[in-house]
Length: 141
Image 1 (cartoon, rainbow, N blue to C red):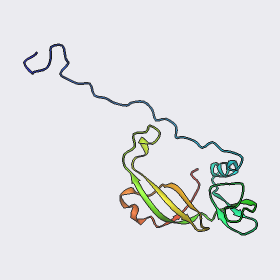
Image 2 (image 1 turned 45 degrees about the horizontal axis):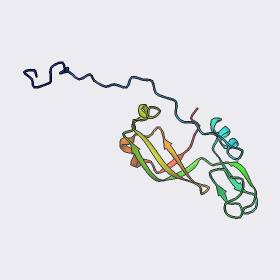
Image 3 (image 1 turned 180 degrees about the vertical axis):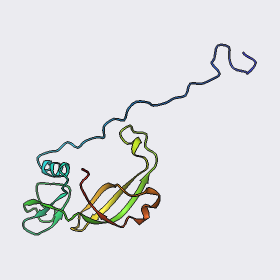
Image 4 (image 1 turned 45 degrees about the vertical axis):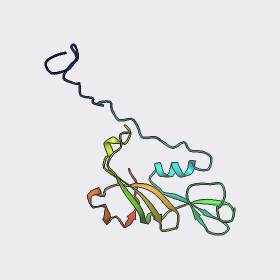
């Protein structure tokens, strides 16, 4: 024992733990047959949703048939307008792909056409994100 009460040979200064590794890329979706056009359009800056060719029902996320009547569906461009249903500000996330984004806003948005979309809101100050009521979607590029 030393005078400080630590066992002999034990360092008294603990090394600081830092995670200096670069951020990992964010997880990317793996498109399937039904969703490939949706992800391709998003990459090009366009938000697509599906509309039933029989009953006119809008839906999101892509499926092979209408959820309301099982009719055929086609992709249509969304208006890009919606209303925030709910949101939260992420202030703590230790996952390497997201830690450099903190704080960021994750929201559920009711699109003008009807479907509800989970997204992150950008160009909104999380300190005043209560102002986020009407959302206009735009290309990330």
